[in-house]
Image 1 (cartoon, helix red, strand yellow):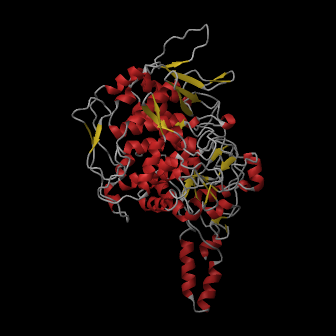
Image 2 (cartoon, helix red, strand yellow; image 1 turned 135 degrees about the vertical axis):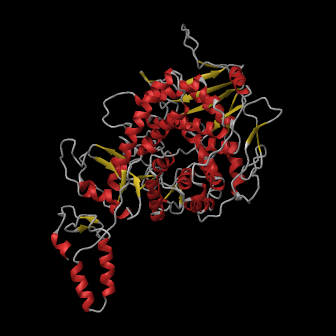
Image 3 (cartoon, one colour; image 1 turned 30 degrees about the vertical axis):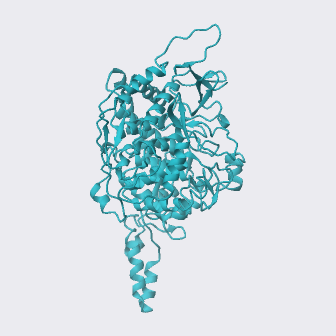
Length: 637
């Protein structure tokens, strides 16, 4: 099937191409661009009230040299008749709106900020004279493939950068164009896609002879591997909420087109089927990792985005007849989803030890090993990777399968959406600090860890030459992820982690011409097939930098915790046996302080672990796989 095409007439209207002998009834989404312009030009009162999504007192106590909070705000220009006509006052950290150069207020911006803004503006795409997005990359040294298109996923950091800089027009136009494209009839071969499916990307084609702009949309039918853009709809809802939060303009979200778009996405995701879990079942390649990488099933990235989109939709939907039914279903799903994710996807040392000791073939609702995971299937690396203090949401959970890989995007979105509790958010930060070399290295940030190698790589990826070990999606380092890390760090009250990562990125990004990704265990090498001047690498850096300088920006992409969905987080520590022999030997040798130290270690866990017979592991961190509990000799000793 050819990609869906929307043609712009000379006066700017959007219409689908018609087949001979057929007539089409006008739909709600066949809106003339002149009508769209009139909608945009309606004067609307814009009420801006930025709310910080963190404890200001605790944040000020952080050991980091932050600039003073930005005092600028939006106001309607006195001589402006457009809802998008904003002035920015007292800018502390925003590039000049018209010059494309950084403004300087209370601090001196990094030298690469100006270059980043210039590169971001070069990537902008216009449709009938209006900016509607940014293309994926401007790299004249490589074949374009689909890097000259506007991707929904890729545009998000660009959109946030423009919003933070007081330029909401391009974001508004993008949101409207994509929701119009959602209404097109979508077919792949002879199969009709769901009505709520959002395009993965679109391309603007200009006919200089007819002076007509045409939008060519891709819903997955042209993608490499024909992968489904499951995350596009979620990102669209999240971005709509970010636009509303940033500008204070609720009229866009309240438009019938946008309300219908939200409901269609929700209907697609909340439809009943054979699922026994509240998570979304997906095929491989359904998200940022859009190639075969063994993420089929219930990948953490999709589940975290799903959770955040549900919460954003809850805030955006009108409380009317159509909206109320959708809202009721969202609330029920949110409670089930949060319990499932926090109970079964969360991994810390205590949970890892429990899985290590799992019994199998359990039947009935009393089963502890609910997914019948075989303990012998636990990978060796996870025992050394898991710190005593720390934890994360694992990559996938389904019957007899647990993917223990770390996925950066899913864990950061879990923090931003408050899928992770405050304790879990802190544990994720602890993990990043403890495993800095593995997860950050010399260039932030590993998309997943660890990489698959040799036989596993051949079986899981199908010998994919692009996803070789420590490259691209298979353990590659992606600079775009720095904006998500920064947002998550600020929300978790650990901005110093983000500051350290940004400084690493600044040392190389401009020099390396803003590559798409880096290769190697430490991310030292520009990716072998990485595009240069990758737009979301540029935008991701700008968003991270602006958020760190003005943390109030976090409010547009962060959601506060719902107190009704708060579970308990579990943690643990470690110990060693034969302590009585060690104690007597130490006393006889005149070194009782050694025994004292060992006893204190034992006291930190023995009672909590119910006096086990023995512990496993190089460091004795795990209760023995078949160890009996309440061993009396240990109590006596």
